[in-house]
Structures are given as structure tokens and as C-alpha cells.
Image (cartoon, rainbow, N blue to C red; front, side, top):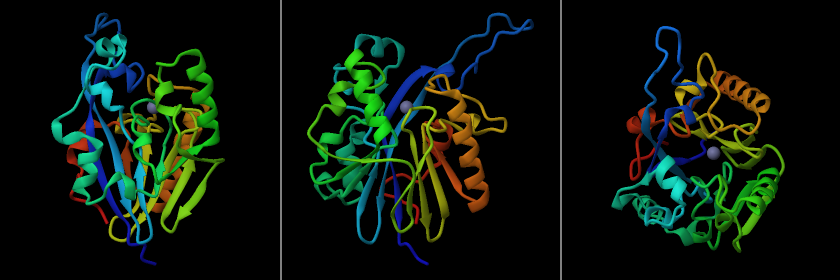
Length: 266
Ligand SMILES: [Zn+2]
């Protein structure tokens, strides 16, 4: 059955950091190499716009606009500096797809970390779909630290929050998979495209192809390692069963090769 979906990848900038944050123990000292040199490399900040015959969806919103104008915490400037080109604002990227923020029906949040949840208040007419556990975690965490991995300013907003519990068949060909581990309420997006077939958008349930494996490797940022690996095993099983194309959350090498808006997958 045809779904008529179109999948556009949106480029929203880069974060540069120690590669051990993406893959734990990427730089490992050994007896042969007792002082290995750590690498400080960029990874992409991205989102995806999905057009269905009946609705317009956005998968993630990237970083807050003020992160690009010096509004980020000092520790961020030192540890994970952020950059983007002029054409990498969310508004511009959506305009390349021929859509405005007001037209978006659903904003689906893979989780609420600051590099994914920065522009939710731009989408006045959309349902903001997030796992209830993720919202509870983000609210609790930002009570203690308003500017940590979650930013209080991102979530303390008047939005049409739509809280869900577990997997959800949202629309024909659009399924949300609850895959906790990296974040308490992490979810992935499974799409059925007419030509490409099944697409799995892992977001931070799997940062890069190195984390995917084999062997599977943990990221440096992890809420719960047991659920992380059981979620990743589940994604492997789905990918194998459906012969899916897997799109990782922060893989620069893969992102460089993808079609990006205005080009799309169908
Ligand atoms: Zn994350």
C-alpha cells in the first residue's frame, strides 16, 4: 500500500566535542599507546521534515536560536562549541521544503535534550508529541539544573504537549518506537516510504554507525546502559526484519552523504 511519504533531512548546524562523548572509550590508552591523543570533532545537529498526504510532521527542532548568538552557557562554549551557517536556521530549512512553522501539524520529539528541543515554541499550531517519561524526567532535572542537558527555557513554555506512553502508530506509515536508554523517554521514528522502503530514524538511541556496530558500543552520554542495549538490540531486530535504511542521530560521515532539503527521500 502506498503511503506517499516524503522525508527531508534538515541541516541545523554542528556541535564540536571530544569524540568520547559520542562513543565511550573511543580514545583508549593501552600499554602500546599510553597517551593517545583525544579528538575534538564536529557532529551534525539535524532534524527531519516528513510530509504525508494528510499531515505535516517535524522530527526534532534543533538548538535554541540564542545558542548561536552567545546565549549558551560558558561551559558549552568551551566543551561543546556550537556553530551553524546562515542557511541552517530551522525556518530557512523548512522554507526549502515549502512549508512554514504555522503549517506543521505534529512536532515529534525523540527526546528533550537541548540539541533537539530548542525551538518548540515556534510551532503554535502543532501537537508536540513526547513520551510522558521524558517530560517528567526533563521537568525534574531542570528543577535541579535549569541549564544542563535539558534546558528549562526549552520546556517551560506554553505548547500543545501531547504525552504518550510507549509505541504509537501515529499515521499510516509513521510509527513511534519507545526505546529508552540514552534518555529516559527516548523514541525513534519508523517510516514506510514507497521507494526507499522502511526508514529508521534513531536519533540519540544510536548516535553513529560505530555505536550501531557490530559490536554495539555505548555512547559517552547515557541514562541507563541496560535499557540502552536492549533498545538497540530491538532496533537491530526491526532493521533486519524490515531491511530498513538506518539514519543515525549524530553521524557526520553519514550525514554528509544524505540527501538534504530541498532534496528528499520518498
Ligand atoms: Zn540526547
